[in-house]
Image (cartoon, rainbow, N blue to C red; front, top):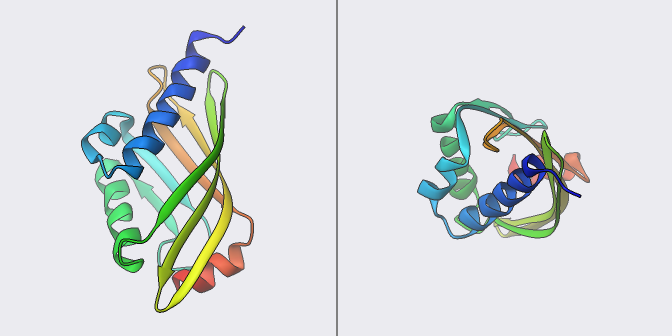
Length: 134
């Protein structure tokens, strides 16, 4: 039987993806801790550690700016336990006449209220991801 923390983490991850897809930043903001840290791996202009809500929302802005608003997430599955949740997704975008698609794993560490305190994105082909966003 799933614990309450597991249920909260799973539901909050699903709510986060839904809010992101609907560009509902107020709803997404409620699901992030004030001092959340997002780790975007790789060697491209979007890579780095984004610390705090303002920095994370700035990252979202850069993501949409660089993709001309075409960045999308398709969620395949979500899993969770009392401390973490995981999203299995496909990310896609268009940029400079090129299309990009990458399967990715998103790992979220949550606080006791189920809010995102740390996020990691792992892509199936980081070199191709870096080349697209460069």
